[in-house]
Length: 163
Image (cartoon, rainbow, N blue to C red):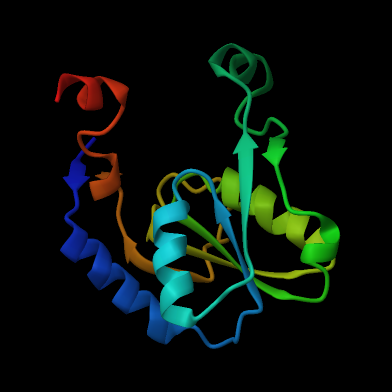
């Protein structure tokens, strides 16, 4: 599989591609941890959003996935209370839509709470998408590559301790 390593300048460019696409005035944002935190923060600042929330979703480990397949139920480790979502247009942000499982789970839970979710990613991979013709409402680029973002490079406790 091809790998693409992005620079901060390339991420800025992707944000610049996304912003003109927004045809709705959002009343809040849900950033999916961990991938959606950096692009979500950049978009929140650019859009002037202050109602910022996070969602953490986990899918079964490899052993469990072998028994249940890719369509296993997600486990929400953290999710905003329904009252924070109800009646609001919510921008749901993640870094990439690969299979689409995580962002779709978050979108559906926001809709069930009475919110109006709109999905947004930096990269959309239509070749891994498990949801047929479904796609993000907003995306900056299409790729089949494994994308490495600048906030993922040379980080972690072993890099900090080595310095």
